[in-house]
Length: 189
Image 1 (cartoon, one colour):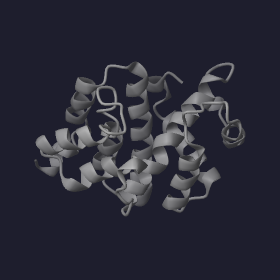
Image 2: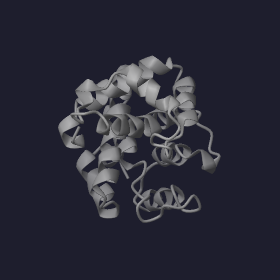
Image 3: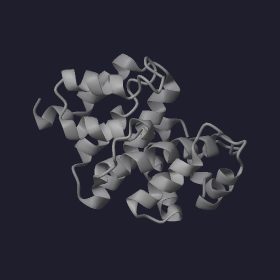
Image 4: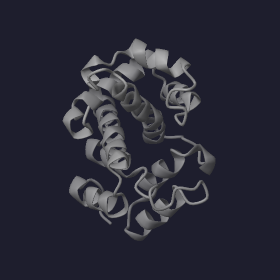
């Protein structure tokens, strides 16, 4: 496959929607995409390519939710469709259980944005107006200390992601909130 296909959001969106029907999982994909795209822009990288890695990082999760299958099945599906190794490896490395090292900026960025974007969404949904504009870094950090809140989200991964990316946690949270605000209508936030 040529690079243009991997940079084609409509094509990647069609793959996402073929495998993912859950509105929440689709919104998660869009949130991660928004954060990864914003970092690509900041770092002077290929915004479309990086964005599509974010968009497709969990596309296989609904059909293959176990650690034995996700994201391995997605890796194989994308390989069959001709996606390059860099694209597939970035997706594979976002799940720590695969053991694939996050040794590129793209891999580090995807990992850093994945759990955090989900957590920001959860924080937004408990706000009185469910409005992303009301979410501040301090409220995200406060909720991170509450182990009962959004317990499925790994706080360790959020912290580790910022560290691996080399960005202070507060700055990373602020950056992702701002990136997600650009698509808040799509996210319903």
